[in-house]
Length: 129
Figure 1 (cartoon, helix red, strand yellow):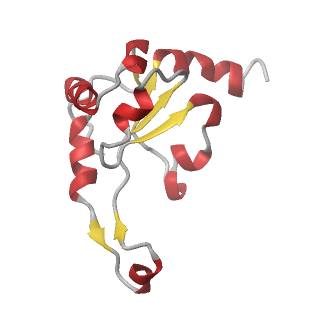
Figure 2: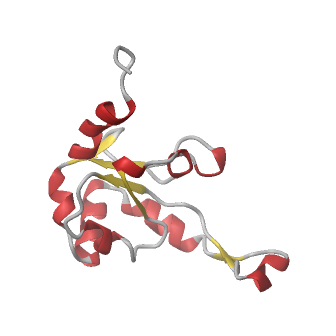
């Protein structure tokens, strides 16, 4: 991932991200927080697959970009869906393959504040199950 310009990890942004409804605004937000370099890396990695998968509707391969985890969408899903490599996940529907695609740990995740606070109630803590 290209995360040299990202200020902190885990990257938690305010809930105002839920109200972003246009792709140009989503791009501006990613540029402001320093995460757009990862989107460019994903966009530039689109290649034609080697082998017979081309004829089986798996023509292109592309690296994964950032994962945006949210709790309530007020247009967020429509704003980010057209950015190459960016995936969206609702915190209630998180799966292991979203967080670690292919079993490789270390995916770059962008959390909204509400989603990050909701994690303990969904998955528990060390003290509470």
